[in-house]
Image (cartoon, rainbow, N blue to C red; front, side, top):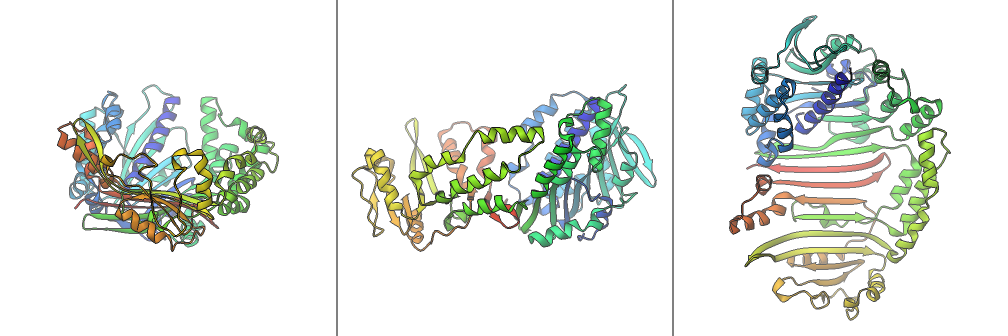
Length: 571
């Protein structure tokens, strides 16, 4: 029985993770939602047809490689079940070298819709299929290579294949199910210990009474967060809490109760007290869901741009207010995805940091919890005081943020040593009075003792103070630009420093990061190639990893927001 449960867990995590990685995205009023229960804890769907063929062609070759760790793990396991999965994945990665080859091999349309959700603990994946015989051929080949065979079954009008995942002689059984009906592939599990009608629902034969379609959850999310209608994903924290604190609070809770009876062990028994049910439900009500949706989307000419926002929803106004209070300044140049190699910025109002943390601390200690695990956590927190942080933040009084940007760099090999040939980079510190902060630091840094910071914005050469050898070819400059203390080298960085004078240190975020992977890794790869040194296969792939990334974190009235933008090209 425990092996059966392990199989369920592996398939649930593996299938969900596999679908999510592919980004392989009907209107929101489509019929599939009638078969998704409103209390599903996990849901992800791409409603508008996603150009899977063009998207694969836009991916850098490095992103199409079979993960070495997964390949080694599966190839070393001679179990027919593991070999079957290995053969299917191997076929996928081989085919994904080219978009047309992928859709031809697996019988996919060039544009597809797809869904991932759970019926309690049971995972369900659905996606469009154009040529079923091509998909069945992939499974037939995997069967022949692995030795795993299927049982042909039928439920109602739907025929399906069932692959046994549990060992022979087990009291309970778990089967991996593949079915194709009305142009849609369904991948799910069939078990002997969960409700038999689950398979009917998963295969689209029996709608659920309280469905996601009736609840209107998807439309509510799109309207609330301003997402594009192409795609919505979410994790329902409230339903997950019900599942582990109650015996029958939702479908997942009822299924877990049944499973724990079979294995004679309930790992959540401590959380099923009335106090834990009530208090954890209260916490989940304050942090109800994590939501993901598209904010930007474009795929054409072997290029892809996908923007998406992740929102950890919160109704806790105390914590949201405290987090908003500590927001600081993020410079504009750190938010641009295509002008540099790498940048990172932390926006933090140091004067508000300790008061904000104290408010959060006090909120977490109120009320006094009776649920034992929560009470233990509060007990540990009561022995600490965020006020102690004031001892460390006093030296940074008035700081609003710090940033670092690498605009360009070049390497060279001199005899046997790799050295820096060129560097264009800038570091900034934004504060109410950065000059005073610099003067406060000088006594602790003897090399800066004779360095004076002009108030008119003119530059100071730090070469002598930092003992930078002329052979390094780096000329470090420092200048006060408005309320920004800048240290930089290179012409691009100098231009950025000059523009900072006009930027007022308004509270505009918490964190920002950008990276251009090709610019980051190519100089090192080229140098290794010129030196004749062999380049490891996993590093060689990074040379042509033409992907740009931007991640920003902020707070708004709806919760904690993480905005991401990924641009890839393969032209």
